[in-house]
Image 1 (cartoon, rainbow, N blue to C red):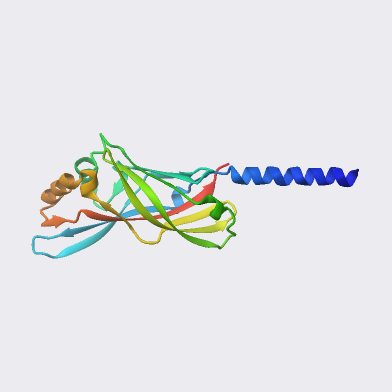
Image 2: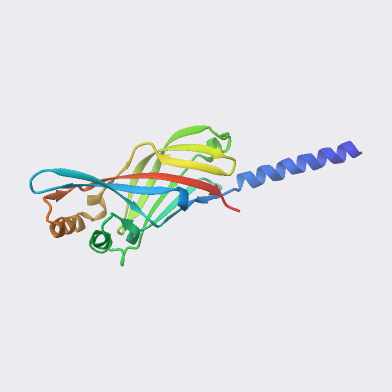
Length: 201
């Protein structure tokens, strides 16, 4: 009887552990993560300069079904120049009216669930970006590494190319160009992500 009781207890424990694992959700460790974008500006002489900027405030979450949601506060863009930060927020993103950019996608959780610490998996994901009152599909090339049982690293294998024209941002880019006295600013913007995700308690 003791053996049968122990067996039932062990079976119940395994079932409960599996259920807890399957229901796990994950959130962003903001201190260990980074979201950057590059701009290419051309002087009137024809010389070009590439600069890398970052968003200071953003959040990401993956639920137990693998549904990924990323929210970016558009007034948190940091370019290294305070007046330019203000212009990007007001003239480009119009953050007072459109405060957030939102990216959604679905990750292959059955594949990720069986990964051991140190394992890495590359995957192609169809993302949906909502920005400036427009939603567009964007392909995402991601690399996912299991750092340990309760922590993942998700990063872009190659930058996500955001076309300003598809989000009605070209007018804002031209305003920034004129304010800065530039010849042009590229409307194709590469975005890169390094996200450390930790299991929610």
